[in-house]
Amino acid sequence: MLPEAAVTAARPVGKLTSSGSSKAGHLSEGWPETPPGADPLPGQLDRWLASRGAELVAVRRHIHAHPELSGHEFETAALVARELTRAGLSPRVLPKGNGVMCDIGYGERVIALRADLDALPLPDTKDVPYRSTVDNVCHACGHDVHTTVLLGAGLALAQLAERDELPGRVRLLFQPAEETMPSGAPEVIAAGGLKDVAAIFALHCAPQLPVGLVGVRSGPFTAAADKIEVRLTGRGGHTARPHLTADLVHALGRILVDVPSLLDRKLDARAGVSMVWGAVRAGEAANAIPIEGMARGTIRVLSRDAWRDVPELVTKLVHDVIAPTGADVEVTYTRGVPPVVNDRLATAIIAGAAGAALGPDRVVEAEISMGGEDFAFYLDGIPGSMIRLGVGVPGAETKFDIHQSSFDVDERAIGHGVRIMVHTALAALSAGAF
Image 1 (cartoon, rainbow, N blue to C red):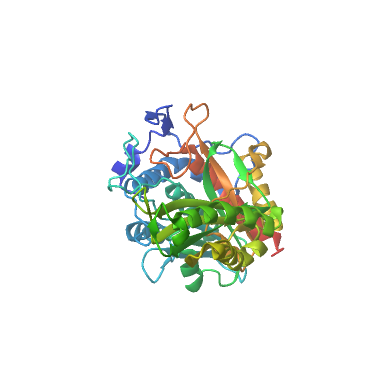
Image 2: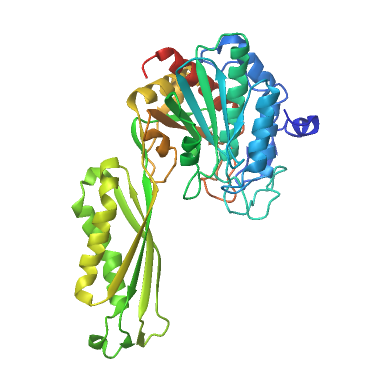
């Protein structure tokens, strides 16, 4: 897969200490063929996967050391396409060259598996051999793991397809630009990524879960994530005579406090709405009322129905709150990603597959996240489900979170992820329920 030197260098698997540095464990024999309590994969794939463990870790570490920002994932996409081609597959690079689609097997019904490729604009502060070589760019969200897992799953499924043992067609979607808006999922869809697809599945690294566990949940999984900017203008003046001004600082204060409170009371509490301001700016001098002010924030929503209504409702609330102050107001509401709402049947399939891959006692209920995830765009058109893959180091004192410069994973999760996605593809193809 990668040069032999890279594979050899990857044989130690990183085990994180409480300081976040790497201690060497070893993967000299790959991962165990079949975890205790798990069902074996068909076609001796467990043995194949165990023998390729060091190579998959090498792929992950190479991607981690050479991260690319959203929209610029050209080398990562080229690596994926190259490895798939070597396996006898026919990958198709997206029009911009920063993503890859690849079908495996034959059949009218298609089951899609998705991974994201991009990194974050953060410095990598870990002291590990595979630390980012790109200044202020880091795989701090686990997309390097997602990419490696999907690549491994694709190579495993290709083994079955070669022997005519794959009961249908699986499409691998290696997507760019999950971390930015506009994001990459609509680009994949526009390029035909969902053509003939009956259902779609994905996983996301979860450092809160120890390696070996998987979190699943039907229904709301992540929130819609929109942005709002409010700009105020008005007559300024001396703080001794606020009655002769629009008093924009006072007006901003009303927006900051009253609009989120009123929004909570205009929507069903079960909609899961959270409005939080992140930036406020107005004036400089303590004794001068400014002539302009600004506030920016995010609005997160779990309910798809509520999400459709929120822009108009919030805009009206801002105008209503500002009206008595005499200030002029301009509201810019920017749509982000929709909420991820996992399909009930798709979730049952991937939960069962995860239980088969790792053992039924390894599957737990996932928490709802108010973070955003553009996997939601795929779910606008077809059923699907996303799960959380445990990557936390058991016993580690430091509890990592995604989007941290020191973020890292227990690399045994790669093998778990590959087994889960292979089991999921086979179960979904066999179910015939979509």
